[in-house]
Picture 1 (cartoon, rainbow, N blue to C red):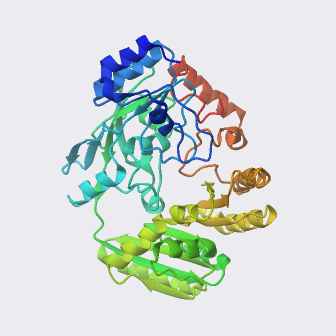
Picture 2 (picture 1 turned 30 degrees about the vertical axis):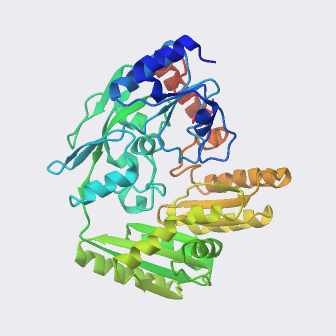
Picture 3 (picture 1 turned 90 degrees about the vertical axis):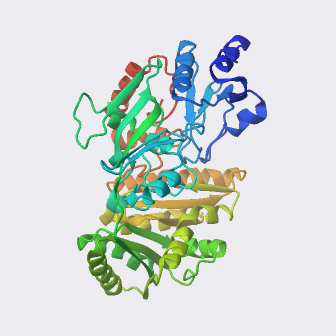
Length: 460
């Protein structure tokens, strides 16, 4: 429990209305989008300035209070589930786009800026911020940095890390740390930016982000290819990449997901297809036309029953909106949805899809598979009811089997969702004991009181 005196200290820093103490308020921030038990924090606070954020970090460290930073809480690995008796720090009041520099192609933002808000603001100026996590309409950029979020465009444009030029963050003791620069090149000191991105709030509290922007592509063309066999679709993914074509997006949906999404969105998806690929190429208009023709030819050579090109931006947006709604659509079918993101080398996508189908049969569980097949990042989604204990045991076994299959194919536990609490016990399988110990030594050196999001990521 936090003492009355300490609670008053928080209120002096932030104002009484920015310190939430009721059980109902605290329960709101006891869980995130992962299927894990909620943990009630002792206090929830909402800084409205960078200076106040630093003061909160310092106060938590002085009193040894576990501190969990929370943006929108859309993460799927338990990364914002707090420690019992700890403090949740909300960033949604730190939501300003501080600068969009058109000459030097960068933006400076606070951590609570919603991803889609930045994307729209820079696009209005003819610029482009490519990372597009599925939750971008509500997820925040601070959370994207903490989880190193990916998205549909990761195949061609990379992930959040590829667009971070610099960060300001508070160390555990409340000291302000500046890393990176507004310049294209910067090799001053350690690469602390790289250390913080993907650290899931365990090494620092982000207060400001410098993001690289690029010119908006001059043209786009979206295609939908349908297949009568799942293997044809998955092998087409590998064939497109093998032909040295890198689309902006290359998404896979199996029949179960297609039907569910169509029932939810009424976007006109082909519900009889065994699988479909959603493909978009972008760039210079002439290059787009050439690559689109090549992609269509490859799809037909690999057995596509039909290849349809969106006739206008409205049709394109309708189809992509439907794809982004895949998780929401699947979530309506059962009380509990377990969404994973085990990722394999792109050439092993067909083998991974076959492995998921076998796991579905073995454990007698419905699994809808969709995801970013172009970069090997699939999202097998298990539909269940956690209240059914016997079935839930099968779900847990199936999740572990999915991880084992991905690792056996040279893959990784997570392509974009992070490790958090949900996957920390599996980390050693992928990286080995030495890596876990090395990571723990870094954590202990930078956060000796272990206040920064304890229990996350590195198998504590």
